[in-house]
Image (tube, rainbow, N blue to C red; front, side, top):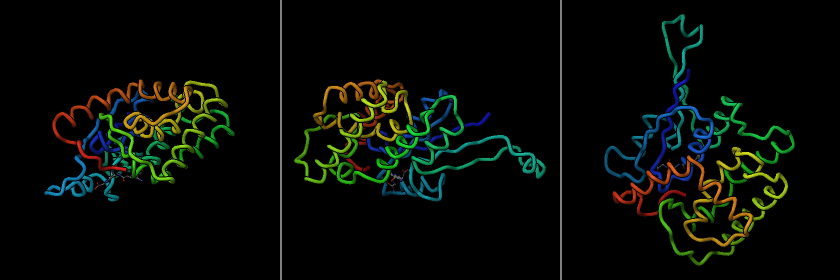
Length: 236
Ligand SMILES: N[C@@H](CCC(=O)N[C@@H](CS)C(=O)NCC(=O)O)C(=O)O
C-alpha cells in the first residue's frame, strides 16, 4: 500500500495546494499533510522548508512512499518515495492511481473538454488571481475590478454554466472531476468577495463548498486566521 503525504502551504492562501487536497480527499485514500507557512522570510524561510520536499521550491508537493520494485528490492531498497509537484500533475497522478474515484469523465469527448477546463484554469485568469486572491476563511468587500478581471470572471461563469447545463450533474462534468478540483479555489474566491453569479452557478458553488475536503480545509484556514497566520492575502 502506498503512503501519501501532501505538502501544502498556508491554507487560507494556498489556492494551488487546495486543488490536490480536494482530489486526494475524493479518492478516500488515507494521507498525511505537512503544512508549510508561506511568506516566512526568516530562517527557515518558506523556500528552505519547501526545498526539503521538492526541488521546484513550490507547494503543493505529493510524496508517494511505496514498496520498491523487484529490481530496486534487489539492491536492498525496501521502499521508494516518488515526489510529484505542481497541482495539475498531482491531480493527474491521483486520478491515474485511483481510477475507481472517476476523477475524469468516462466519455472521451467529455474528458477532452474537462481537460481543457482544467488547463484553462491552470494557465489562465491572472487578473482574477491578482485582484481576488484566495482568503479562504474570510469575507471581503469586492474590490473595483479592472476590465480584464471582469472579462475573466465572466469567462469562468460562462464556462461553469455551459458545463452544468451540458452534463447536468452536481459538478461540472456530472460527478466530481479534476476540473472541479482545479476550480475549487475560484469557488472560494467568489465566495470570499461575494461575486454575483446566476442561480445554477450559486448552487454549484454551494455543492463545492459543502465537499468534505472544503469543510476540512476551512477549519484549518479559520484556525490559521485566528492564530494570526494567513491574515494578509499572499498567494495567487
Ligand atoms: N504551478 C504551480 C504553482 C505553485 C505555487 O506557485 N505555489 C506557491 C504557493 S500557493 C508557492 O509555493 N510559493 C512559494 C513561496 O511562497 O515561496 C502549481 O500548480 O502547483
